[in-house]
Image (cartoon, rainbow, N blue to C red; front, side, top):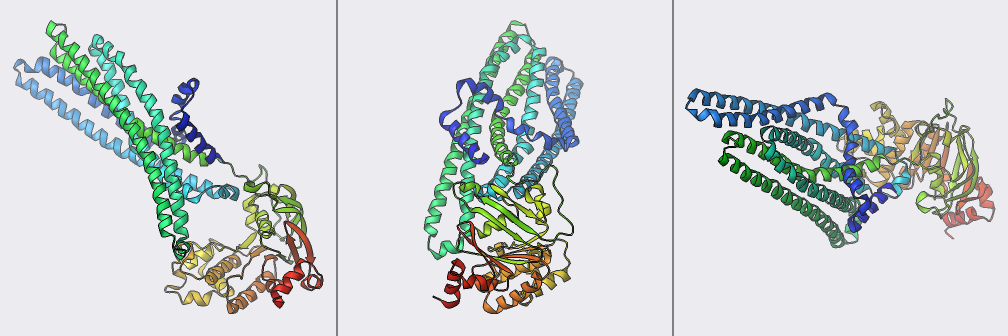
Length: 606
């Protein structure tokens, strides 16, 4: 909800602005999100210090030029050609130092920006992988991808270039301003008098740029989210001939993003125009006053030239600051969006002192008066007072109509969610007292919706045990009745299967998932419609493999096809989140309950 709240906050600010009492605080906070990047910079403090040293050297070299110009004007034109040559030689040396320091600064700052953004991307992605499924129930994958790519690119541009330019021009502005005072206190008073007139518009427009930048980034994220969702279902899209509708919707989303970006760019353009006019108008005014002093003999031409150069440096530095201020404001908006993710806490996390699960694990599972509602639908009960016990090595099936709560039991066992009331235990340890990672290492899952990654067949199977050998992978593929079709693939186990395994059939994807679960060799096996996508021949082969796999471990099976649960020790019948019946197939079929009606429909077709 933090992401939603952040967007609502941005929308409110864009629509109504900031209350007058809060304007000062808002101005100070405009770049506050960038301060969150400081710990990332400190990881590479030596590189940052070297970049700062190079930046300082470049600024000092620049500030030395007006001194040489002044002496050349006042003394170099006295007729001494050697003196002129020496001044020009000094200026060449200064330019050499300037160019070398600028090159070092560019390299160090740019690579520092790349390094920081790489770390930030990795940290955000790692944090996303650890968030509980309840976060993804209410978030769009495409938006998360936009934050990982577009927002981090915006930060890289700022940290790698804009911040460097801003620091260089800030140092140049401060140094030039100091030398202006040293050169002519009188003229400096004129310049200092107009600085507030220049700075105040920068602050005000910078805040507007940041707000509009945030809106533009959110609009782009919406467009990216829609594109990712649509392309992921392109076959369904084409089957229903909705290409024109999807293109129209995406065009509208992109147009909204463009309009938001245009408004952001317009704010930056206005900011730049105002700043440049004010800065250089002040230079012209000061130059006019200085010319009067030269004519009256109160100032030498060289000193005026020195002051004008310092004034130009100060004005140029301030003008550059006005341009990069908008870019830095955009980066602040991007950083705010990224750190919103990093600040989200998972609903499910390990306790401060987790209880270790017994070793070796036995696979003893118990539900005691469990009630549960999904966080996104708290008014709807998914489970109501569910209680059962699965002993080690026992095979238990869970059946019932769609939406009865069968998969929810698996979600709670894997601790993707915590119960609203009651408790779930594994080997006598309450799941809320255990580390979720420790718990999940003892569970192998074959989900109903098989997850196949855009990797080779071998790496997809190895996902169940990252350190598995090739021999182990080939052995479990044989057990899952997958080896035969894998050998027929162009490159066998090294064949790339495409995004979400698009080049494989549903049955082939499911057999790879089964091989992955066999490879995990966990004491608790969860099968969610594990054979639903197999043809009759493959189902027989896989069922035999599963029978061997289930022999020495606790197994809980979810099935709609009752033929797959006949060999289970016990069957639990769920309906509307409650266990309404339990027993063996023979016992339940003999009664006149829900299971008997389902059995008659499937086995007798009546």
